Amino acid sequence: MAAAKQARTVWERVRAYALGLPGAVEEFPWGDDAVAKVNKKVFVFLGVSDGTHPLRVTVKLTAGESHAHALTAPGAQPAGYGLGKAGWVLIPLEEKGAPAADLVCDWVEESYRAIATKRLIAELDTMPRR
Image 1 (tube, helix red, strand yellow):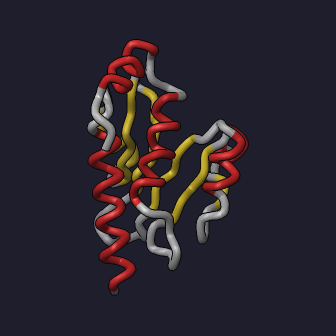
Image 2 (cartoon, helix red, strand yellow; image 1 turned 45 degrees about the vertical axis):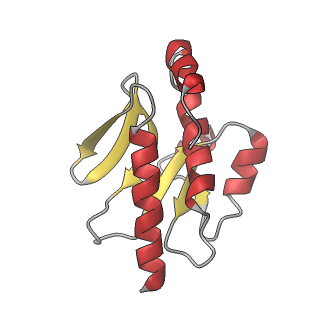
């Protein structure tokens, strides 16, 4: 039970961070399955948070080092539906040894930077670090 509570805390922090990025919006294109978008493009799949599915996030990591690192997280795998071929990684948050919120937020930021405009990235660069 403690793992689920810790996963919820990590997920909530990651969600808040993602939605605090310049121009970010939350949408639910597939019912209860939440995503964060910038410029009408998804930069993080937040999944379902109502307890019907394990908590997880999916981010696009194009830098080889961070992509490889993310895949070492317990239970992590290339995202389905062919997204894994484009660098998307599904990261379970309820697994024993799951990554800490700060690291997942770093991955969310990398995914955001791959999609956001130069103006939004410049705005992000002026914001205080978390």
